[in-house]
Length: 379
Image (cartoon, one colour):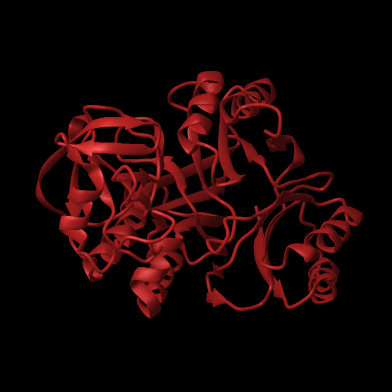
């Protein structure tokens, strides 16, 4: 397949660049659109719909291409994939649970292809990313390929998803790909190094943790992070900064870890909210402050796949936790450049509010403070 990234400050600029591409005998059938100004979603959707181009559209505060961070309001990855080899599915969960909406997406994928792969995004940060994964895998199989990230602005967690025909502020969007025709390779990688002894969740409910090692959870976290990060307020609760840089590393069988940041705290009951569901008995360790080794590990994950499985790629998508942007600052450009240089092909990505992907071993899961990347190659 052929691929090309374009950008514009307005829908009018995007239309102009798209027309220039199509005049050069490039006829995309699919576009991945990332935009910041939600008001631009409708006019952009109209432009691509008029040209019969399917849309996987997401709103986000920060985005990038193979050329680095992009300040323009709209960027897009154009692909000329055969229409027989992909489907776009968008399901709302206004009335349904996140699990049920994701299950419907999984069913649609299985009905379309014998071997579907899913690149997904979701809107409404309050909905459980773990439920989305469970719904998808219960319908499509535990070993289903799932990569993606949560859309939205970290300032207020608002976001939208859109296709050629539909827009949603609370739903799951999927690009379903026929893996018998298009190879998909990708991983979820963090790179953070663990520190300290293992801690155990001893009382929790969903994403809220009340005690760690039978001690109030907030006390344990505060002892590690310091009093300046968690302080009492009149409301009795608060939001931790997205660039905190100290995610919790939850241990999995086989030695792998799932990264989950601490998001909220409540001084009334000394509880904390984790970026992902936890269970009583789960064990975690704290993380060291990140350095260049964290970036190196992410880039090494792509070079390893290139050497072992995928010598060439047609295009690449990247979903990087917004916490990494705040933590690394200008250093994040090194990570973006390293990812883009692996295959040196068109790439598009955004800083997400949660990531979906598979570690080296096991099933796809919901992560935080992680990079989930996926490379595509038409067979």
